[in-house]
Length: 110
Length: 122
Image (cartoon, rainbow over all chains, first blue to last red; front, side, top):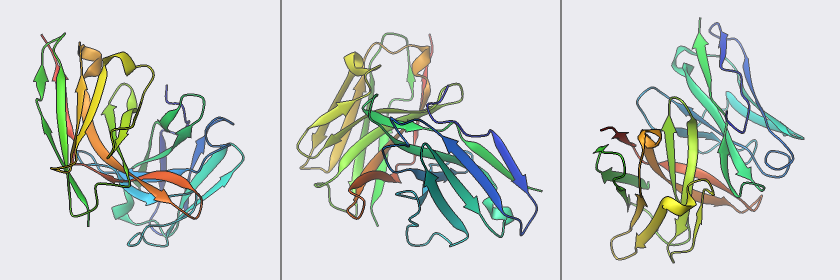
């Protein structure tokens, strides 16, 4: 019952490109920037992409983000085994006056 | 490199008050909003609220009547109290920092604490 909708899982073989979608509404993604995080079990989330498509220093350029209308996407190119994690999107929601999150997508490297 | 260290009681009984504190190390305390977020298997990530160094705050409307947040600028600490807890409040609680991206005039959560598991059980 997360406000932002993500597929629960995604997978790919090493070297492949994987894309994760994040769907919202005009109150959130349609109006505000989207940010992406990854999280390993038992650890805190870490910032991957901010403001739709900006990478913090230290994040490989294999990770890229985009936004169109009320949806956003995270792409992982050149998939590596270390990319196995849970990925979730976040943005501000103007109708709820608060941060909202996606339910998370677990990426598996086959 | 800013780091957030958090602590607080991990096991509570129903109707008790949850208290958590987060300390900010290695960075400025002013000029940011400081945020509380919780994560549970059933509900995923849920924003609780945020407060700035001057004490101005915003709360999740669904929790607002039970939330109290404060800051101690002398110690670079910020704190959360959640009253009348129930089993539904069982979660890992994170403190985090909201940074500003001036190029897009938007906020984003950039640094997270290590998380504090809280269990509410009789």
